[in-house]
Amino acid sequence: MLADGVTPRQDGKFDIYGAGWDTIFAGSVPARHARLVLAVRLLISRTEAEHPHSLSVIIQGADGAEIARAVGHCAALPPQQREQISATRRAGVSLVMNFDDLVFPAFGAYQIVIQWDGNEARPPLQLILSPAAPA
Image (cartoon, rainbow, N blue to C red; front, side):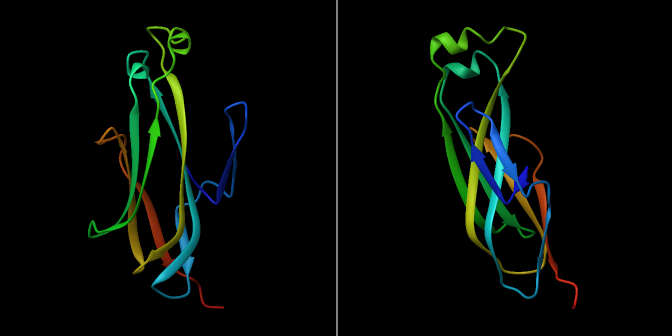
């Protein structure tokens, strides 16, 4: 989920604000966007929880050119936490990726590629940079 901000809580939950958008309106290009936050939740099996993992988020232009990249890491879960994951269930892993002072060179479609251990975790999210309506 794209948001303006995310605040993690001690109980593992997130307070997400300014969330659920997919379009940025700008008066001109190149356009600078102060902050874009991506909150990601993935489900992993007990076996997957035995090993560390990496999450990469790449923002690309329509031509595939990389605008920005962030990488996060997820440590292996301790044995006592892994044992709480049943064989038929998956555990949620949540990560927050912050992008500050992004510069979008042109109006149009961008995509946000999410990779888990180097593999695409889901189809890319779409992000549109659109001209602001005249006043």
